[in-house]
Structures are given as C-alpha cells and as structure tokens.
Image (cartoon, rainbow, N blue to C red; front, side):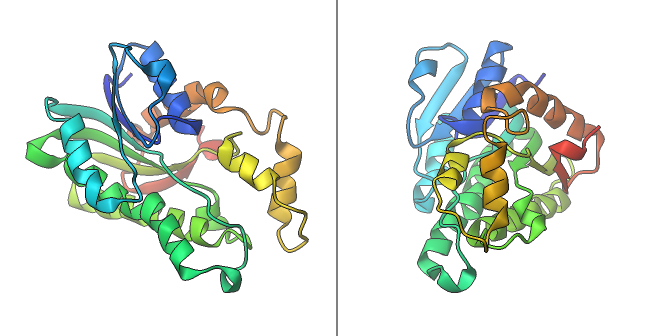
Length: 238
C-alpha cells in the first residue's frame, strides 16, 4: 500500500473514493480540487489545496505549496476530469473542446512537473483514462480526444523518466457525476453508448466510486509489475 499519495479531483467521484480508501488504510493523502471535501477536513492524514485546474497558470504554484515539505511521493493519481458536451465534432465549439483539454490533459503537466520539482522522488503515476480513449464511439469528441492524449502523455513521461512507473488506466463504468450528466441527456439514436450507460445505472455493471475503490487501488498496485507507459483497462486486468 502506498503511503504518500497525491490525487487530483479528490472531492468527488473516483478521486474521492480513492482518497477515502487510502485514508482508511493509514496513507497520507494530498488532495487537489476546486471544492474542499468537508468530510476529510481535520483528518491528520489529509492535506488539501483548492485549485481550479482550468486556470493552468495557477496549478504549479499550488502543487508546490501543497508538497513543499515532502521528499517523496509513492503515488500520483491524475483523476480530475470533465465530460463536456456529448455531440458530434461538427456541432461542438472549439473553445469548449479547448476547456475540456485544459482540465483533462494540459493541467496534468504542471501537476507532474511540480511533483518532480526539487529532486522529489515519485514512484508511480497513474492517469485515470477511459475506454472512450480507444473506442471511437460517436459523440464523445473532446472527452475521447483528451483521454487518448492523456494515454500518450503517460507514455512520453515514461520514456523521459524510467525511474518512475507511468500508466493510464480506464476504470470501466463508475456511477459518478459524469454518468449522471450522461443520463440526463435526451434519447438520440446517433449515440447508442448513452442508452447503454443509462441501462447500466443502478446495476452491478456500474458500481459507485467507494464500492470500486478497493479493486481500483489493487489494480493500481498491480500495474507496477507491468510495462511502464502503457494504457490498461481495469476490466481486462487479471
């Protein structure tokens, strides 16, 4: 079990579920998100900085301040993300796509660069990716592009930093606020994946973040035995 962990998007969804899991196992968790998770306030193992990852110019200084007394990180989980609109590329504004890319992809660069600053050792980095990065499903436009690029970012950092293990991991279907956003969409025959996700809600096929967290943490640990820089899907790890 890693002992020092940095998690982006720690206030909700998968980030919150993993933060709670690691805290319950005695780890020291450094959380980053816009909103402070009130339930973690005052816990001795939790340190937090409010960061709007869409404001790229503020990210590096905030991470540096959060980690200023830390000489080593066992694990960095790049979890923060946004869906954006689900529509065809021809219907999607470039500025909206840029906003999704900023949060899902570009914000991870100042996070990582600050994590490695001042000679700090980082044992493992995991970017939370998605099956959308490789499926080419219609309608997922900026989200799919950002996750595909995140996969490549992990591969590039792995080539630059062989002392650190990098990977991108798709967690499968998880009942988060992002899924709630999908379920609120009207029926549209162009996007059959939306109907599949709606049918999976409330079933074992789509667990909640806290329910999934132990298996996800176990998978993250197991990735250390696999090639660095690769993309993996939780559902195919055995």
